[in-house]
Length: 146
Image 1: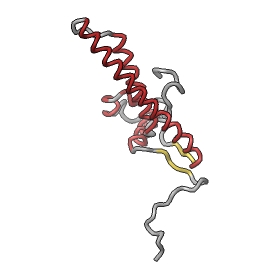
Image 2 (image 1 turned 90 degrees about the vertical axis):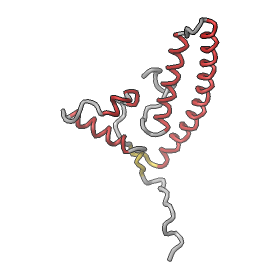
Image 3 (image 1 turned 60 degrees about the vertical axis):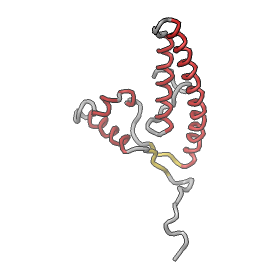
Image 4 (image 1 turned 30 degrees about the horizontal axis):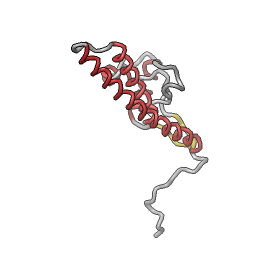
């Protein structure tokens, strides 16, 4: 009996890897194909409840070779650091908003609220790229708000 039985096997550089993080990604791709053919429901329950998760540019699972995954891993590390900066910004916005609300007797600053929402949407888009739910990178690689 060999000591290699049951050991995990890692892909070789020439092998391809399917980058489908969740079964939901494949299901959404199937629904988009059905809708394109005029079949299937207009929107799934999940899409109705979470419209921010729908990404028109996603085309389903993408085949990536092992060397192609290395840049993605590096971008994930960079985006993780940027998310940390975004969390600090959101904390500062929240503290400033609380101060403004104390001074203005409970009225928040609309521009700060909008800015906080924009940063939150960026974090959500970054998390989708990190988890392979989307192939679209967040700002600054794509326009803000897209």
